[in-house]
Image (cartoon, rainbow, N blue to C red; front, side, top):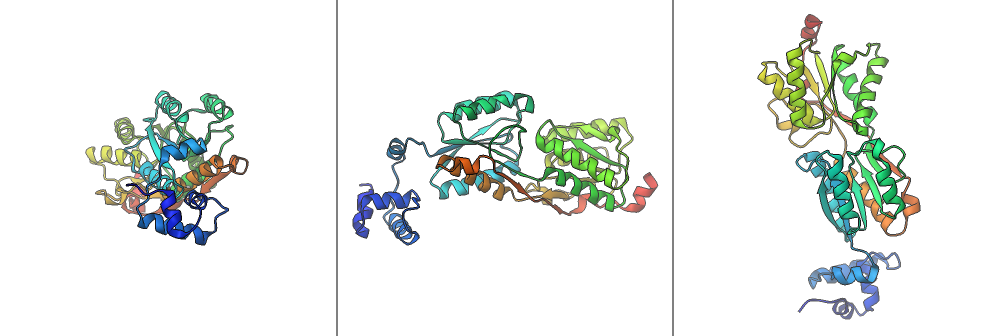
Length: 343
């Protein structure tokens, strides 16, 4: 027979209402009482009746999370952070995958927004279509954006300083002696645009003219980095160093280089961003720009819980920006002497 709130209350000599409030993190319950209740509930293997809880509170205790690429370990780490905070707050997550496409993203959002208490979205949606989310928010859907932002949308956002990502990557290459620095450019997402802006700012600060011929449209997937780099190699006039919009495109580019017998880190320096978990295990370990993906996920979930549980006014305009830093590995090891010879 399953354990009930009444069983826990009887064990502790307190009311069933107090037990319920303690399990649901009610601020009226002291931390000492909450700890006693949680200890007894674990000992008795209490399993909450989520259906009954939803009927009483008119909430599902489900949160939808839509990411653009479930195969990308970067988003897996973000999901881990979201999941950790969700479990500690008695929520469960339902995951959707947009595959970096607008139509599947909107479809996933529409499917989940009526079945969950709120949504965390890493949008592929361009700014021109932001009205779709603005309408949903006006209709009462609670949304937190993560990793990427949408200008003009009033909702909480959690991201890194993507302009600084571009600056850090490009200035590191400049310090190594490079002046012919290329950029594998992403999509229309805020992360892609801002990292390109950071690249341009770093060139300008160091007196290096911006050359649009050193910008190659790429995308955000490893396969797109590979294709873009193969095309660049065929065209010729290669840079001595490349800042890729993210780690997957950098990895794809390095694969194309190696197939063409160009040595990443020796012939061309390469730097990515995102610090995906296997970047240090590549044949040529990838230099990258890093920030805490777990903290990003936890921050987004914390803001969404605040909105769901009545602190919408405090949370709605919050923007959490995590600071990036460089992680130096071997893919930027091209020697200055070779750079001077190639110039």
